[in-house]
Image (tube, rainbow, N blue to C red; front, side):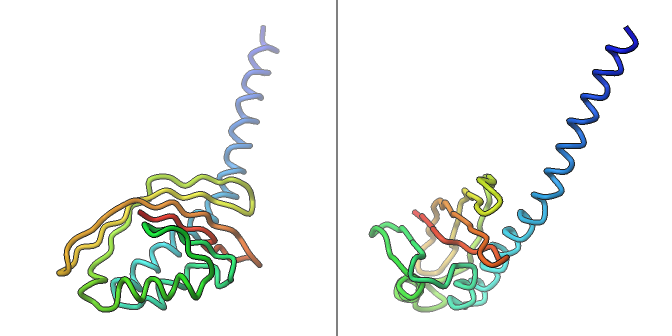
Amino acid sequence: MYFRGMRKIMLILFCLASITRVNAQVAPDIAAIRKILFTQVMAWNNGSVDGYMKGYWENDSLVFIGSNGPNYGFKATLNRYKEHYPDAAHMGHLKTTIVSMEKLSDEYYFVIGKWALTRSAGNVDGSFTLLFRKIEGKWVIICDHSS
């Protein structure tokens, strides 16, 4: 009887240790991704589309999917943002909310969230899904679907 009780306790302790180890590995990644998203919002609210784009993968393989369909490449995405948000009145004040963050692997995270722009040109809001990839030790957005 004593042995079975000890076995259960050891199993529980092993599980807790495993969960703690996994959480310790995940926490820095989540913090890094949250920092990128926070920095993007700060750049946007300071009127800097270029600063906002620093969260994206600067590569021709970047994919942005908006209401007009997909755009491919960093430069095309940057140009799209600058065309749709040419000034402070159109940029407004951005607020985002992370709904969920899911680790897909050591190299990928999937993020679901909501965005809202309060602006003199008319308020707008929507949802987004982001695929983050760790490239050369740095998390970047490689795919953004915002609507």
